[in-house]
View 1 (cartoon, rainbow, N blue to C red):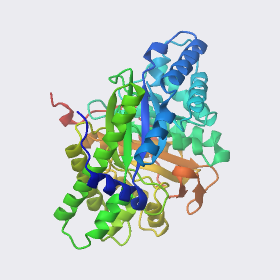
View 2 (cartoon, one colour):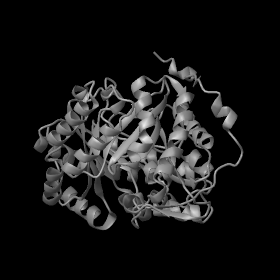
View 3 (cartoon, rainbow, N blue to C red):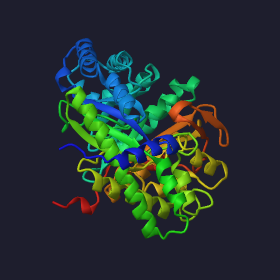
View 4 (tube, rainbow, N blue to C red):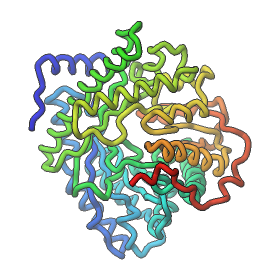
Length: 455
């Protein structure tokens, strides 16, 4: 059934686009590669290249045409694929670098900026294919430009795979070292998850889940500037009134996203999946989640009250989206990536925001510790322990949490690292100097919480 859009809504959307940074952050085409498996990795790689370029041949062109016709910016056109650890399991090869290179070539050919799915799901254990994939990550991210990787190490049902957590700390360190000349940029394309969603359109964590169709269009909408404007217009409202205003705004944004997503799916001849309404900030002025929290009355993001403000914001966004569409999915809420949010950067520089406070905020936001830059000499065990903490928050709270952390080679606390574009820049943040080595070396699996037994 088509969405009915009024003239008033159209004019309001135009105002949001022109004055408040409203945009479609990404149209992501999910593609199943399960029929590309073959014992010969060269054959697998070629089949993957052929299928991705065939399915996504018109993705960018369709996105650009919708952008021009509707006047709504579509910032990124992207692709997610079946986790490569599954697709490549049959390959008689020691590593999957050749597949990563093939994915990168396909992404470049069709004109998308990122392709996600160099991924593995290892929350309860690792197959040989999972191990090969994980140990291929550092070289694959170092030798490709557009490939993104993710590894799911925990779920509420399975608990936390601490063997995988330990390995991922080491993988992150190796990836940083191999991309030293780019200040560890490879780590910005690697996410470690708990309770990963299989329909998330946002990079670097997107992949095409095993329960998804042959191909699908998922849309990610972002409007921090629109919500900031609402908060500024209601400086003295109670939280109940303010929450209602944010819900109404999220409702309008979600309807716009679903309209664009369904139109893209129709033109491409594939099903529409979900709209992910996530307040995903950018380094641009006026496009900051931290600014929203400060507009609620906090002097600086990170001060006492920040977690409560973020909880209210996240909940209101989800409720508004759920009212607008029956197909809200992915993450949908508020992101707090430090390097990609100008307000967050200012808060870190002012000393108001540190990793401990960010960890507390991840209990109520959509993802977790995102785009955090730490000193290059941070140990692999410390990084693993940070991942374990975030996984525990996700496991206990039945929510998605993640870590995208960058130990910047040669950089120390207080220095700044510049990644450019949507990845922005990040101040190097201190980590706790006490050791977690013995804790991480225990290995095994942290059991699932009692509320996992809910059948």
